[in-house]
Image (cartoon, rainbow, N blue to C red; front, side, top):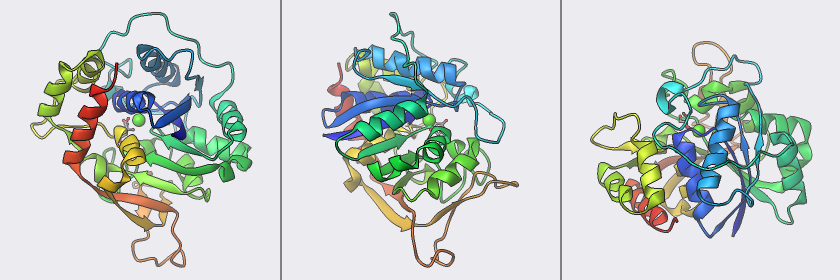
Length: 304
Ligand code: BDR
Ligand code: CA
């Protein structure tokens, strides 16, 4: 059983990542924290609660709301991709549980320090909460085994030609996280754009069970799927957590560009030229896309 915290901005692919983490018996999801990203933090918090409630875990998995905006850069959402609510495509019914009265940073600090074993932090939004946590409570760093973070790219970005959305949203936070000394697994576009959920997989999960129907409806809600399939970026973090054998990784030093036209770029020191051969990240560079699809279907099959 791996104890994790998830810091997230649901977001359709965040919802898929949450569903996978909530339902896998090997994962002990102790806390969900939310951040502004795909939509504003009031909406990402409601969306996290909706997913947790959908799986009947409202009394077990607490949610704490976090940063309303990036550290320095003005906030820009991605509602054009995820819909105005952030989780377009499915009507969640029922009263929602309340978020914790603590902030995300306070709750993360409390849960990490109270844990009897080091925890894994899975980050699928911008890293604003993580940066604030490390700045305010640096003692948590030694109690984290690693951060598995969706974000960044060694190739082209999806916001600018240089920058991926999560890093682009708050580059200053990404810089703090990458310089924190906590081991980071970078799950970037290099793998998430390869592990496309195929139309066949989507057709299968649609009729599998209520969870499959919900995930299908969210994932296909923009009605604009290519024949090759759809990326559910954030779900790749949980795939890595449980099946690192299906990813190829490279140890690299990642620097974050925090200004100019390449703001938010994850710059890899591929020649080991600038950091004395030291590395700060294990970067996912390849993935078995078929194994990802098979795993995703099997996980959905086991959901309620
Ligand atoms: C990332 O950006 C967000 O829109 C997604 O939820 C994902 O975390 C992909 O670039
Ligand atoms: Ca996300």
